[in-house]
Length: 472
Ligand code: ADP
Ligand code: MG
Image (cartoon, rainbow, N blue to C red):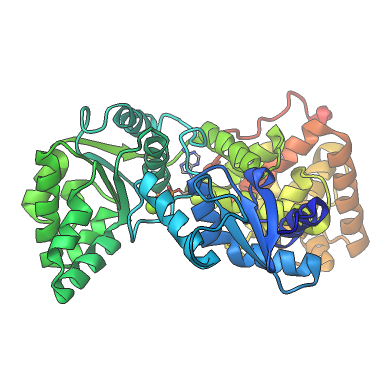
């Protein structure tokens, strides 16, 4: 077996950062290239979860990178802690030895077929705790310390992208790190339904029951999908009872509280309510800032306060979107090769295809400027040149130029019948001042936020007017 070339490996990682930035994680640095065997690169990681994740989610990208870097038709195989060192074959072919060691790894981590792939990112360490999820987080932690001894079942519910799956997987990861690990089974509700139907058709109900009932911890994600089929509900009811009666832990996630899931049988509603039901809420501004920073960190970046605050103010809906914004900034950073600052973040989030927002109107701009500067619209549209009016007028022109599709002529015409060179000059003046004067930069930013989201300010920091107009 040939020794791997560390330069090649280094290039592979850079290639991935350039071509698949959304996939890259900080911990990829810890992957150890251990050998090359018959055109297969062997790379080792120290956790089975990472190995399974790389194998299931990242193989094509790594293969692509290896082929691009080496110019040869090579492939990759990820080895986990339980895999034999490369070159050591058991009786039989390489294939057999690889698959048998993988099965050994599955056994030792309580892996079962059909289980969802666990993301190595979804740890407790990577879970930011805020008032919105504190209870759910605490309940999940106490279950890890004492499965089936505290809250059973634990029923976590909340809207999309608020961290339910992350929390369930954090429990899996924490439990799998125990020695010996308990037998856990983590599946989606759909998987439960599919496996049940398959078992019915194949006449393999006893295997099915063994798979779901001979476990220490059963976690089912998105249980609200259970309502689709009656027989599945019936089977789940029995599964639940069997586990509960033998003191096994059950953890469920759902997009709604038990009594709000349509068509859920009453007896299931009451089972679900018999343990702890906790809701996860959308994250507040402070939590969002922390999440943004943390998402950047696991992707090997550091976002400053300004960038994090900008993203947190702009993306308010849920955490998945917040992460999407971090990925867009990362991609922009890779594409432009520029440092990650506010300007880059703006470009990333304001020009990308996902920025579906209502069009900014001149009325939005005027509202924002008039209420901030305390000037009148008639003044803005007049020929008056005194500074207290000329400056807000320039801000209007700048905002109109940046956020609407009106031409220079149209903008000039609207604000006091001026020609296009006046508008160009105004835009330049504002940009220059924004770059030179941090306070003004922040005022402008707040105005821009307000123009984009004309209803109440979303980030809780409405611009406050400076004490005197001369400060402008
Ligand atoms: P859900 O299952 O509720 O729809 P997910 O668990 O899939 O949501 O979360 C969506 C994304 O948001 C994931 O990338 C997850 O890591 C992230 N996320 C959610 N909550 C948190 C949190 N408290 N801290 C860090 N990341 C979070
Ligand atoms: Mg989910």
